[in-house]
Image (cartoon, rainbow, N blue to C red; front, top):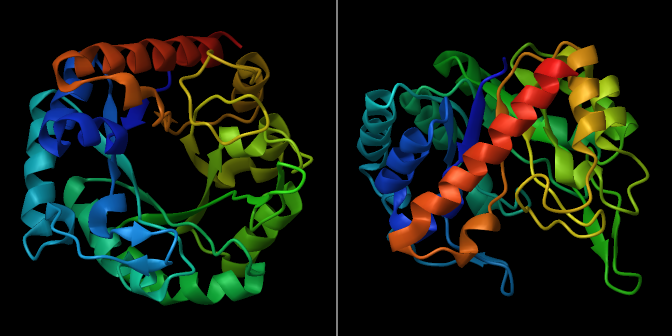
Length: 288
């Protein structure tokens, strides 16, 4: 059976990173996803990075990550992957990506998801990824690009962005063409109305380049990042596509909206619900 993981970013906003890894281990997950969004404090209104006192932004960030790894290992878990901060269009954030790759390696992760710039072509985005490849190789960490979306506020539906279609995604992969450059399929993004694709179609197109997942649910319109099986996505079809394409990576949840309703004292209940959904999906893939 495929192993299961979840991002810790949403849990850490309730209980902190150390406790988040602990709760993920207690719930029974095989692995955890190092969510590094708080390396920066990006203001989406001003489009600037604001002052930031989080440990991920400190000079001691690598030691902080080492401690998280130790907590995970005490529960028999590994860090399977990570997520670098975004948006990539911000140069101050792009300048953090080599450090993000090092932090991933220190945590023990094998894949670091680094978003493409939504509005650049495959060849334009490849320039950034080429600048990071030597660093990735030196740390033994693969870079994964991800399918993105833009938004039309008049029609209130998603519009195309980098990697949002099978054609664009494959173009990005081919533009870099390296064993250290792979695909992370965001299930929820692929199912958004307006992008004219689906998660199964993406899985079929990506083949063995698909080595990471972001799994969550939505109403097939908004990027809601909800717990699987709570809304409209057909996870049975996705499980069948993964099985047919011999996917052998981790099943990693990115249902980060789920934890917003939980206080510190009942955070474990929320994490356990995430575990139950991930385990259910793993069984679906196994039996597909």
